[in-house]
Length: 127
Image (cartoon, rainbow, N blue to C red):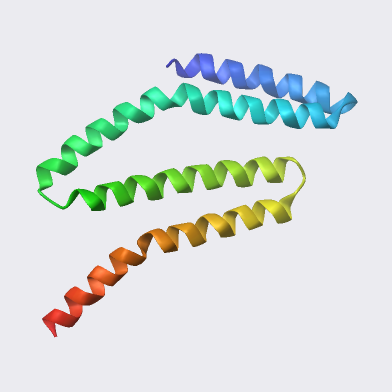
């Protein structure tokens, strides 16, 4: 992936979106969403390389693999929540964007509950 190519693609898309919004606001928003999805698809191979390297480093620590999976899920949820929030706010729907943000936070808390449970059991055992 070439960063300059992605930047040029995004800048051209922004100009087209600004032009489209003057005539058909809905098409501008739709193009914005399509560009976001396209950039995400371009990033997937890079994300896979990052995950493989991080997993290799994590496996060297000797810790349980479930913690690494939990961390990866949390990072993914955070990125997707931020993207969804930003798209909603760009569409002028800040209340929906805030709801998406709240939903992402709740999912993160639910994801972390087993970890908190394990930690509390360890603390109780020490006492």
